[in-house]
Structures are given as structure tokens and as C-alpha cells.
Length: 220
Image 1 (cartoon, rainbow, N blue to C red):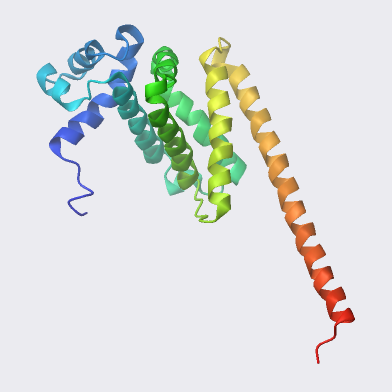
Image 2: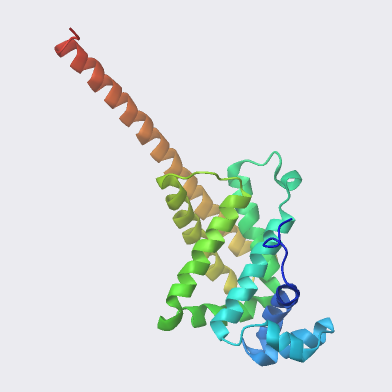
């Protein structure tokens, strides 16, 4: 492991606090009070905790979501993903992400409002892109062409809409959210199937055009 891969003591402390800050933000908001509560919960010196965690509301939210990303990566080991089809992987990734964020659900409602403020929109967009990219990387996506971007935009839209449903879901076991997520993924899979068929028919048309062209202008 290189020095760049090894987090500093301050970064380790920041990561240790991140999820607890989100959980306490349910009661204290995304404020220093949430940091103090998280420190007490984990038995960490509040002074050190305040030094480790960013003071800005949006930056505090960003720290929390980064740790959600890490927790997701830690959970989905190659062994857990083995044998899963891509649809199963994506559904499991989104669902487990919601489970990780469950203790901070009410704080996430406030977080979305904060990130929607004009001064925080660029950060909010970066967070959304990073979330989708993280999930696709965990799922094993290695695309580098235009498909790389369309996949992340599509998954970002599915996750964002599912998150909004989840925030208001009062059903036991979040059954309404589960049904909504399944419908959204089904819609995406239908679109992907149509795109694949269109690409296939386009290639066939192109091959046919080349064939007819050769008939008309035979090689000399």
C-alpha cells in the first residue's frame, strides 16, 4: 500500500465519525452539534472531532455520503457479487445503499434541500455523479466510451427518484420503495434492450448498404 492509499490519522478520524454525524443530524441538523453528539456516541474527544469534520453544512453532507460509498464498497465483495446478473447487482446496490442510510433518513431530507441551494448545486451534481459511478464500478463496469456516461446518467436518475420515494415511504419494510425500484429498473432494462436491438439493426443496415454498394461498384 502506498502512502497515498494510507489515510492520515485525521482522515481516519473523519471517516470514523462520518456515518454517526449523519445519524445525529436527524436531531441536530447538519451542524457542529451533530458532530459533538457523534463524538460522544463514539467516545471521541469533541475537540478532535470538530477539527476532523468540515464546518460547512454541504461539506459535512459530502463527508457522510463519501462514507456511505465506502461502506457500500466494503459490503459488496467479489464473493457477494459472484453469480449475480447485472440487474440483480444494480438493484442490490441501490437497496443496500438505502439500508446504510436508514438511520439518517430524516437528515437526508434536509441534506437534499441544502444541496439544492444555488451555491451548493455544483457540489450536489458532483456527489450524484460520484454515487452513480461508485455503484457501476462495484458492479464491474469498465466501459470507457459514450456508454460510460449514459450508464451513469441513467443510474443516477433511477437512484435519485427512488431516494425521493424512500424518504416518504411509511410502509413496513419499505415495500412501496421496493416496488417502485423494481419498476424503474424494468423500464431501464427495456430501454437497454431496445437500444441493443436498434444497434443490431443499424449494423445490419450498414452491412447491407455496403453489400449493395459492392454490387453496384464492384472492385476492380
